[in-house]
Length: 390
Ligand SMILES: Cc1cc2nc3c(=O)[nH]c(=O)nc-3n(C[C@H](O)[C@H](O)[C@H](O)COP(=O)(O)OP(=O)(O)OC[C@H]3O[C@@H](n4cnc5c(N)ncnc54)[C@H](O)[C@@H]3O)c2cc1C
Image 1 (tube, helix red, strand yellow):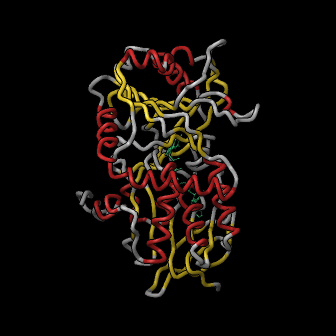
Image 2 (cartoon, rainbow, N blue to C red):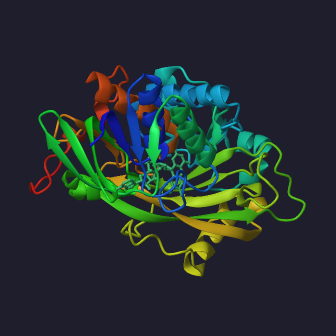
Image 3 (cartoon, helix red, strand yellow):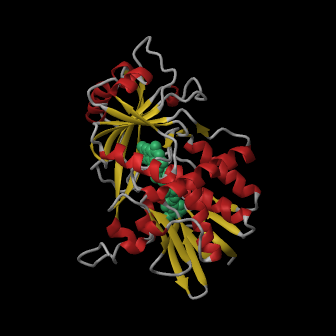
């Protein structure tokens, strides 16, 4: 049986960056992935993700967000690719919106450059969103879209060129930890490592049953919508509209200027953040139906009337929700040799380089300088306890 310094299970958003970080640090690193990198059954497909820093979810993410954006930029330079498009991000809502006030607080706390806009500013600078729903806005220019498939495939290529091996179309079935390391039992045999990083996204609880009661996998529908004829999209930012609930919002991403003539991303994307549609990742999410897309288009029309023309294409994708919407990143209760990231709760892509680095640090050094303490899985009690919030 081979012996590795570290095995990264799941070569998706977080896993690809963890594998890259480990191999660049000189570790003998193996990635195990049940499909191909950037496949369309997990959580990291669909051509675009928003990245931003004035974070309403929790101000403690900001240092990690800065680290992650630098990580994407570093990969861009190394591989000669464009992963980020800084079209800006506009958050919109009522004047008492929690999303807006929390974003402004994060910006203030961390010295981020944002514009606090009233309805007249919004109508002048971003006329698509002139609606009664948008009384106030927060605009961050140093933000925009990141290209997920391109980021993952390039992180994997970078890891490989630094010496990592990757086994594709191989499912890790079980982890068997002992005092000296971990056996990873796969469909194609067993591999042994001193340390294991688990970054399997929606499948986290299948490999780490300790997470079963903490995670819920939901089906998310995204649609690419051709704007009404004649409507200019010049200067369109990414946007998110607060509808009064931080776990449910409507958001959009403008057309990607690098999208090919047949790519869905040649049109703006619109989607709900959050859903109650719970799914089993192995069964997969049912393709979008009219009962998904009709309300989505109607909401889009209310929020940004000039943009909501006809739906060009649709896709589903998976969120893995934690109980509080924050990630779980840290050590497994089962073994000091196993670390994981899970429950990325629909906002984790933009943080993948930082989470990958943190997991690599934890695996190889036993500690990390990245401030991930607030994401510790220890904030939840063991599954099976009556009150599972520690
Ligand atoms: C529609 C949608 C829109 C989103 N928008 C945003 C956004 O705008 N901004 C943002 O920051 N985030 C966004 N997110 C969230 C973000 O995309 C996810 O949080 C992130 O991609 C999850 O990364 P991951 O590494 O945990 O999972 P994945 O990238 O899915 O990787 C997990 C990998 O593990 C593999 N795997 C699973 N089980 C095994 C096994 N047993 N053995 C081997 N391999 C295994 C899978 O095949 C997969 O490749 C969005 C998500 C969705 C679905």
